[in-house]
Length: 594
Image 1: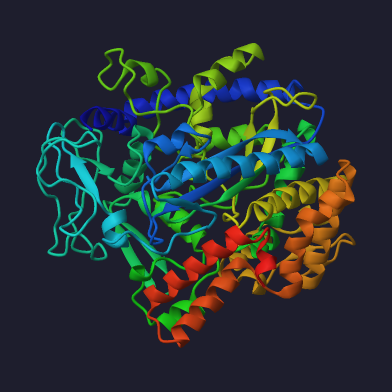
Image 2 (image 1 turned 90 degrees about the vertical axis):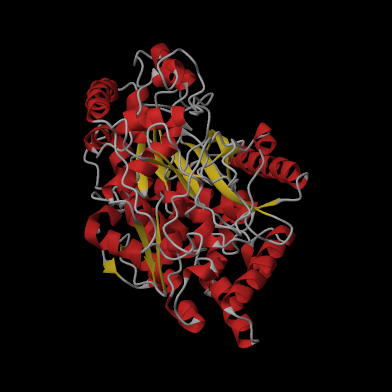
């Protein structure tokens, strides 16, 4: 771990930040010049997707995924229990949507088969609620501290399933150890008495590593940057529960899906982006799926937890992990020009910067490649993937040069909607010089068809609103932001704000969802998507509104029923999760359960 600690300290230094920012600024100027020159215009709308998962054992408890699971289509993720599937982009038409659905289904099946060889399963769900046997705090707060040559013990406690208190090196690369636990409970209390560690860039400054986080120095740099800004303790506060941690790993409680929509006309990109911001509330309200943390994260009466909890706790987990001293995770500002998508990244607060040459020179500058950085890994909210050498050099083929540091910083531009310059080529649609909207607020859904449904809904809705010259962009940004957080808290019962096709401001949810589905169908029709494909994916989502239920509402009902039967909160959550996992495998869509 010492080599990783050297890289992390370098990432935390002012010298690195200065050089990184200089490169980002220069690379950003090249990108904006190319956008203004028209080289980011393309021929067709394309779509892609990122899908995050977590693993459980035969008892339904959270579990680590072994390394050989990632020899298949799955990419590694922030937590050792996480995996991600990514689709190659395709055109927004019948064939392209079929390709997306088939790729997701095949990759999920292959990943499940590899996990099954180890007695594990991967779950299409948005938040795990049944922790490993040692408990949630022990799992998420299990850390070691490198102090410039001396490495303290994994803070795992006597009943943890993880860790080796003997001081011998294990497969994580940790050597001689001594305890950093400041409590008598193995580190399981909610933070106040735990040893507070404030990382720094100096040779003798501490660097924290979370044992159940992938041992990648970029993850660790982000972790230590957030921890340093927070003074050594990161708080998570939700209705009924207050927890504290010494790592951002609690963000890995949650998993998401991220539809991507590539916009062919660069001049229209700001409109698509700003429309996306104004659709956040209603689209998330249909998707909510993370109403509970694990039971041992709560201090309140179980009935209060059920009644007062938010429908989408994934948002709280991510925002509270990363928003330290600066609101990195938030609803984005509107764009006035396509180049703003680049300029906003350049101007954003720098978090845990890395330099391209570090991938090759090794931690001590000696030419090795054992840095722990895997440029091929997938994208997620805290750890959006590093640009690969192929991606960085591919810009040379398009006249843009190496933009590695800009791409790296864009990975930590954490907004609930994000504009991205450059991506994968799609034959007959675009080359690598493209602009896409990444739609990031949506939780992982229960079935593949539901996942693709939200991909289709998002792409159709944005294109339909833009093609109709819909006046939704007249909705004040503040109202759009309030609608989003209302959906986070209240799901389908949220007070949503909208501007109708007639230019009328409304908070009537019936009117809002009528327009959402009408314009999604219009957008898909405009792209030549057949009626049968449109209805296959949109009808089950529209049925959620018509029946007044979502996965988060179903979960709350099931937990409430289990509590009424005499279960405690942990038992009620475990019962609900078992039923959820079984139903998600047995049915094509969530509404088929009802």
